[in-house]
Length: 200
Image (cartoon, rainbow, N blue to C red; front, side):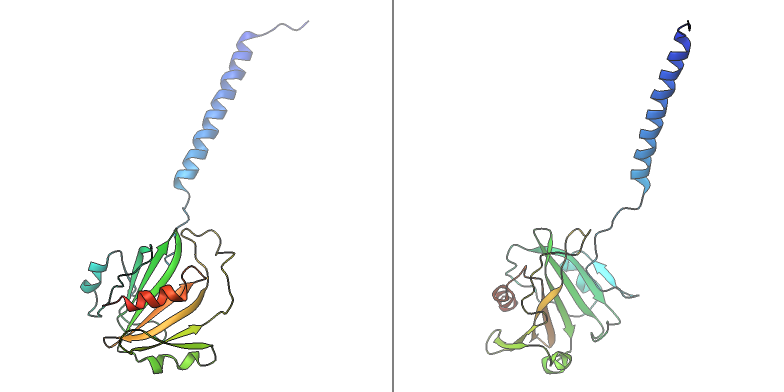
């Protein structure tokens, strides 16, 4: 008949408790040091992109005049990108501003200095367009990039969430071209127009 060894049982118990503690500590260290999912910048990346977080900082990096819309429909500023060397068809010192609403990209406002509406529209000739009036007879165009698209499945694993740009409103303002682009159907065309008309 085997003899019950109290010392052996106590050692086994202590070993088990120690192993659990080491495993728990290891998991906590892994969670602490593993690379975190970074929030999407929602800005085109260029070698000299300057990213700022307030409207006041824009003037420190570019002479581009950025009109701020008074009507934001509950959205808030997320990030601002300044492009000293431009980007693709954008000229030097273009500015891109991303607004969020309910933790989703709501609208992107791009300010392209010294750019004319007619010239900028050339690559969009194959897309359906609507003529609109912004203020005091100032013409604009809504370009429908993806008609009938609903953002039912935003890009996975992003916080805030983002979808595809579906429509863009283009118009000139004080020598610059303003481009308001909607993320899915998060902003309506009417809201984009009101946002444009509220820029002073």
